[in-house]
Image (cartoon, rainbow, N blue to C red):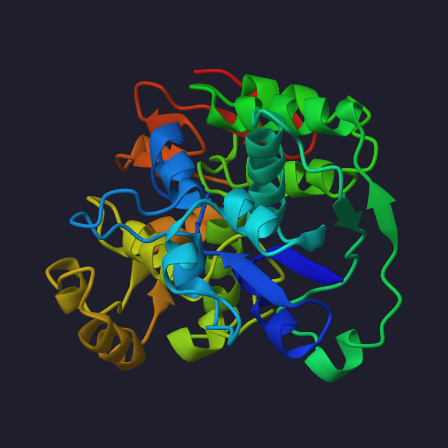
Length: 330
């Protein structure tokens, strides 16, 4: 019996848990930047048809298996599963927002295939995969569900909502039952909370960064430490981009962030890491006023940032009211 696990990058440790013959972690970050096109995502799962154009595909992040032919790894994921007699495909996606976005994406993709794999199973992963010990996961009882057509419909609806040019459809999901995809709703609410607040102009993570800096956490090492912010949305490099947005605008909320970050190549990981480590952060007068709710950061600073399929700009600034859990249109 051959078994394949599909998971997010949070679940790479499953490869050492002996729960499947092969673990396929998906690498996409859907919580920041523009979303990949549908064509790009389909090519990622569809294999490397063009040998000249070396685009990353699903198998590039899978460890080599002794019984797998190299050329078979270049093909489509579902064709590979059929060729190697895979009997079960399991979906392991924990409650982290990016993982839940990957779950609704892969379900939407599978729904559009000519034949949905009958051996597809959803695991109810109600714990953080990234922090889990593979040895413990090996014997952990994780509930398993069949996936019905209604579940595919919910996933497609949620993925379409996130890709839409406004967050309105995503806000509407909060009042709908989502069945077995129960973690999608809290993940979507976490994501909506990252829209600029109707009061301060800051997303939830930006506000938390100011709170920690105000309380004396002036080193980026402390801010970027896993769990320090109490937020599951962004990874450390994405937090760095948020800090830059708070520090390098016309009216900064943060002082002390190394100015070299404004000119360093985004791919210069070593240089950027060193610059973050050199920084000693504090709040500006505006930063204190924003944190206290006396100022709106977006009235003083431009924004051009993607939230799912929505491009946020000052002229088209969707906001979120965390008190009423409601969307505020531009």
